[in-house]
Length: 313
Length: 306
Image 1 (cartoon, rainbow over the protein chains, first blue to last red):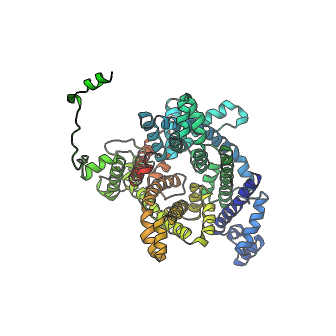
Image 2 (image 1 turned 180 degrees about the vertical axis):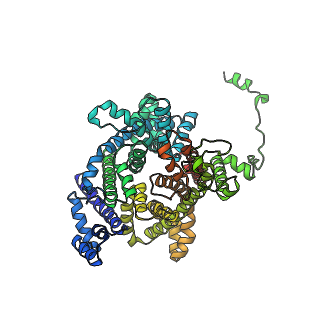
Image 3 (image 1 turned 90 degrees about the vertical axis):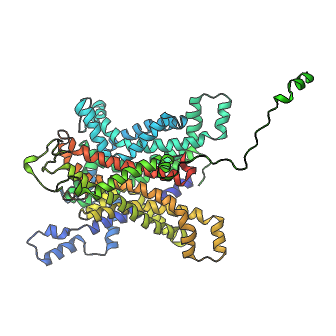
């Protein structure tokens, strides 16, 4: 087991290396010459060349990549072109709203989607099943910001139940924090719920045909414990997998959801950085999100062995 | 007791089964387009809606539209009326015309990406699956690309270039192609184990013929289904890119950038977002239905499961 964990962690190193190379190329290929920008309009070509040499921009690609890479390993993601602040500091300032939004969404999505999928599988081929599956197809089809505007229009503008936009830090009280996150979390979770519910149903349908389910039914186990104890546990691996893979949807969706609900998180930071062409920030955010995504899927792989002791690597 | 039973079963009680005809009459099936639509409602509905959107995109200039870029500052943000069916935006442009023309962008991006990503993914997946020594390298690169969330990858690529239709298609293709490549590789690996492929190899079939005659035809169904899902996801990604200002510039109307421009006014003028949002959602829904229908029709074993 310990050996497996180590091997699995080592396997992510080439992957992260490739991501780092890709993200670095992004800045390398970015239009505009930082040396020319720093030198200003009055500079002669010699000035620009001197500044470029001073910044180390005239050295080969790989040398610059490894230098940058070792700085990243020490937590230095460079400085923002627009604000002049370190990128890591700007990310740290914006991380709380995004982490809050994603964790509320994650909890909400799993607690809604898994029961929906289980019920759809149980009531397979009835109207309940059809309604859940239709909602799932709808969830894949409506863009995340459209869901956001619809919800905000209905529940915030028309009914006035919840705040329209904005974010309250968690230290100002759990309730206002949560109130501000309900609509964004439903918005962001919509497609995620669709995805998880669909996989849960498919996986449950397969498990419900197994002999041990018939045995459990024959010995008089109640429907509820058949579904949630016997079947769900054995159907869990595809569900956990899709929860991990679906994190990509959450990360992409957070960028949009934060724009719709004016939440000052990493998504807003990314959008602002794109509008200002602030490449170090884009680079930093992409690198960080990819790292998080890889780590989450690593954890998912480790959960497999706990869910199914038969899995040996 | 026995006698009673025997007596009660007189000859009259024994019913002789009717002789079966040599050939059972075939179940009545409606033929033609209507029959097909009844058997595959998802394909019929999805395909039908998609066809309508294609016609809209094709005949946009003939559908009572005006120049979608014509600015009329005196007629800003009018609500929907007989003159402006979907209202006007903040520059006084007719939203109905913009939405009709916008169909061109969404469909081009959706189908362009589906085509390009499938083609590129197919080639990479085939190489990875058939030429074993490349497999390790290609799969590591694909793992790396797939560990960047696709929307973020597309955003990062768009940040490098100017917003144009070609660049949007390219960026989304790069984000989607690894998924196809991995699917194709998986199918190739399982097909390689099939006895008929072994037989073909044993009979001395060369690589090109092996690929085109034995591998590719079996690849068509999963690729087609995957392509429809990519088409749907590309349309959504395009609208997201436009929405956050990293997509196609507003001079070419797309459903995404019409909504992007309505963003600042959404609380007072929700109709600016409503109409393009409806068209986009209905189109993506149609493509998804088509994909589900194709999957069920092409692989009946999967039909009941997902």
